[in-house]
Image (cartoon, rainbow, N blue to C red):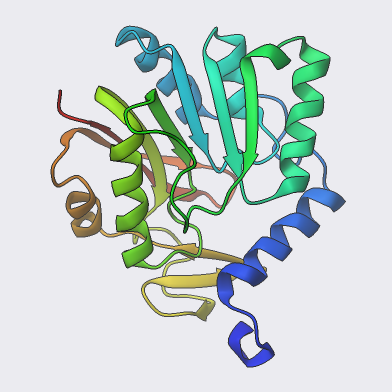
Length: 223
């Protein structure tokens, strides 16, 4: 039985699942930044970025790291609970003045003006329960809010991952395990999302105990 059988869409059930997960497991990913965030921070410094938009910030381990690194950070997530934890951590760390948050569903247009940020970061946000059409629309929105020459660093689980083609199938290469739905990427989708951009790098790496197999993608909005 699917979410739609209960009158709910998959994204709606995923929102509820993440809310419940953050409530039961505050700070579930710990306080140390992810490896992609450490890489992105060095890259953002190298290109002279000053402000960073993080999509899918969760409880904030990476957003807080960017703020400690001296960036002004705008953090969004569709979990209000995760963002509450992020704000509390920013206060404790004395960096609240460099961090703003907004509850936002990335299926909707980004709540930012055109060409208003230097860099965008999204760790596994683009491989959530989003259709290919919704992902293309989101990347278009990211291009809109980035300044010319701005950098976008993002990560996704790919079709070489152990969980690909297993679990509950929701169509469009989306499979669900343990309540979490993942859209797995092939290289053709990565390349399609980079059309109109400069594709700087597609880097394969692993994360976690399974391990999860991901790509870290870096692309630049042409100046």
